[in-house]
Length: 217
Image (cartoon, rainbow, N blue to C red; front, side, top):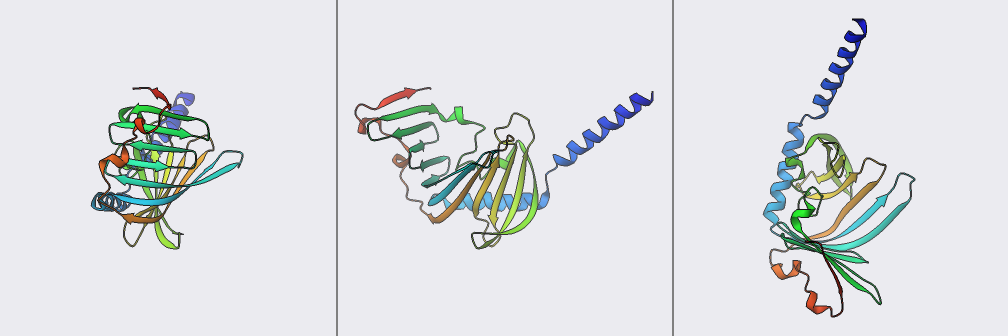
């Protein structure tokens, strides 16, 4: 009986701990809702960004790129690849001096992934969240909100958003894969641009004769 009582107590503690961890901090929600509203009001923007990946051993890689976002659409340009997403189709374009390739997926196949367009509303389902406090980030006072995945099979178990306290703009975010890997994104030179045409988010295969097409739709 004593062993059963101890097991029950242990189970109860675990249940209570999980429930506490899964809570959604109302203060954090206020910050997140303001960030999401700010994104919707922008109706399109362009920016430069820095991307850093660090694995469990401490080895890191850093790249800079350009990004355009409008609603569900985005275009992401890195030195070795470019990703186009028009909300329905995703094209991943890779080219070198003597080789060109594009992989095509349905946007629905990317569900669950964190993207430049859904990072603003990722907190709405699948994550608990809490306000961690404030820190200086890019010379600005940022409110740090931590998101914790509610399911073990989530692509990232933890996400930290850095949100400008003065105007609710998203300054950057960090994603933790649960295996020691950390992905960091930082926006720079963000400019509002509501005039970005739909064609900007579409990859035109016809412009690249001889390109290898890998269609996974």
